[in-house]
Length: 58
Image (cartoon, rainbow, N blue to C red):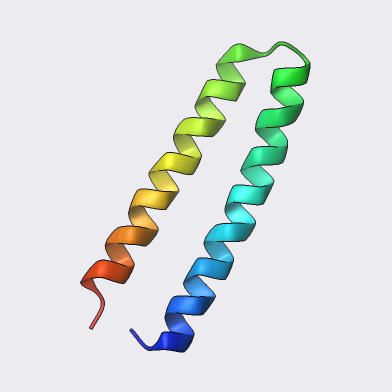
């Protein structure tokens, strides 16, 4: 994985996190605990995937 690909991957992950965080914040404000927890779990899952991709890249 080139440095450019790594940057693009991290940029994409950042956008995923921002979108997920906005969903989680909205759910939390509405008192929707289940959605808030699910959103946090999604962010953690995506973070692990991105870290794995970067660590195993050539």
